[in-house]
Image 1 (spheres, rainbow over the protein chains, first blue to last red):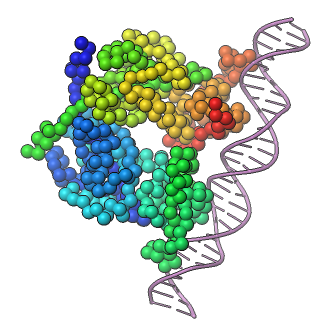
Image 2: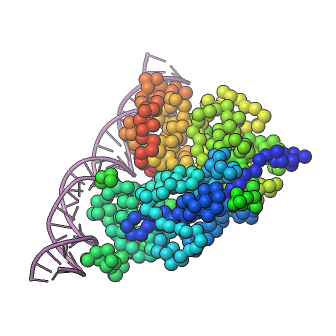
Image 3: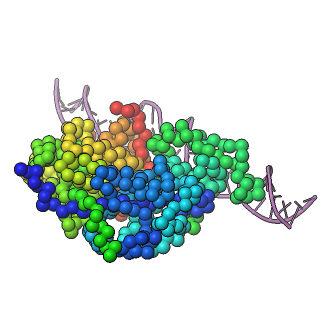
Length: 236
Length: 236
DNA sequence: TTAATAATTGTATATTTGACAATTAATACG
DNA sequence: CGTATTAATTGTCAAATATACAATTATTAA
């Protein structure tokens, strides 16, 4: 009899939205789309979609991400559930926000689709629908928080990357400048990087050596506490 | 016309569940209730409730928490949105889990109610309904994570507390033993604690001095990076 | 050959960590 | 009243880590 109890309760729509980070070797970027339907048609938005009946939230986020980028098996983590009553003016809709870290170069090969996606510099995000700006703000914060003692930023890099690129990445995330000598000492002391024999000649005349992740160590130390917080030199 | 788009989508129930931590000076505890309705009537459960039409998730969690403990303005933070399709066998129900840190002594005065609440040692949690055990596991992890560089554990203590109590708390959270000398040095070096003239005579013959939080500093440094990670001596 | 550019590398000091045990204050008991 | 008991309080030294700071080197382009 008590089984009827749920009847009196209200249901609501549940969506997922993805905050997709990328890094081009220089700057941090976000992938946004031009919303194709009302309300707010034509405005910039995070990529999202409604959770389907047989889908977990995680699966829904993966689906949405694949739809836009063609990518699977990328770093994806739940950020926060947004749910104040009128965030979508049309109807009450909860949104489970996920943030994704992708290798921007893998993405570029895909060339999706009818969402009119564009990469924006993290510092130049246009006005967004609903509470998407809040979501991004929270995602930035969480990334800083996490990267402070988990080597999560490597998810944004291609297989081979240089130390100057890595430092650019950390400087972008923490919006600060770091000392090159101290940075490389600290990063290399983790034993996480394997120096390659080739150099990247694109960025400079001299060229910078490539490094790869030591994947075994990476997986092992991912959840260990390691202080990856860089020491800001000056606030930009 | 596109306004009809949402029509084809499915709605679901959305609930909140609260993981309520307390600390009695010795051990970490969780407040659980005996579920009063089907399904799973009579089994132990986190305190929860459905999100009402005009309520944010946060408000729903506050309401539920107040209902059970009589407390308002306590530390409450969203933990994670749980949503796999059949977590509630009766009907698809998302649950936004919140964790709360309360002063267990303030609670004890309230003596609620018809939920049959009981404090359980964190190490002796009984079998729980649905995915509530997962929620608790995640909450424990998050508490460890946060307490590592935010002084959040003070939310579990009464206004006045002793250093041995504080160390018990950290040892409980990290399930490890710490060195008294190093612990007090580290904690006191933050300048966060104000030594009182009175002693707590309950715990020992000699008595231990009370400390209070320096509230101004507390608020200021809450979001700064501070390494509160204790150095485990032995795993218990 | 030289100039320009950006990558690479080292050292000294200050701070923090971590290991380690003797002393002290208060009470209870003979 | 003295003594035993209990738990709180306090200090030092070595090791590791953080931070400040600039000269040298490899490569390309002119």
